[in-house]
Image (cartoon, rainbow, N blue to C red; front, side, top):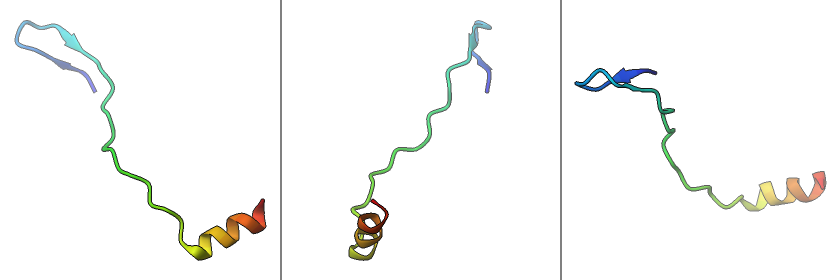
Length: 37
């Protein structure tokens, strides 16, 4: 995505995705991870 300001200078910084916090795995997911490991 390219944008320019009022002076015509190009701004091509990457668009950052929204930040979210990871959730702790449930007991069932933990058991699956243990089995896979």
